[in-house]
Image (cartoon, rainbow, N blue to C red):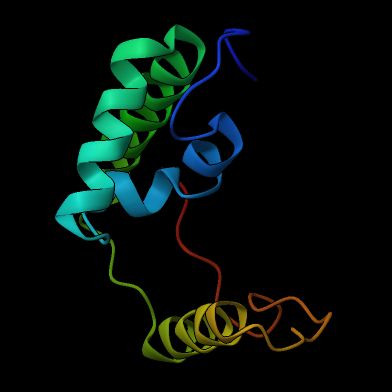
Length: 103
């Protein structure tokens, strides 16, 4: 996805780290780069807006549900593996987790 114009920060970098930006989990200098990119690139801005809307919807609809602590631990462990560049097991992290109630 790109508007076809060259940018200081490449579209692929922005999209690869979009959730870190949405979750305020990146340094201010990177946030500034992303904000500048969104001002220049309407396709990336559109993707940002869509992901932001989905995140708000999930929070509104599921924000009150408690996440089982063992599921949280498994997910966080997998995130740590991915961030450290280690191989991630193929098994589904949710396979042994209890199902959340449906709305």
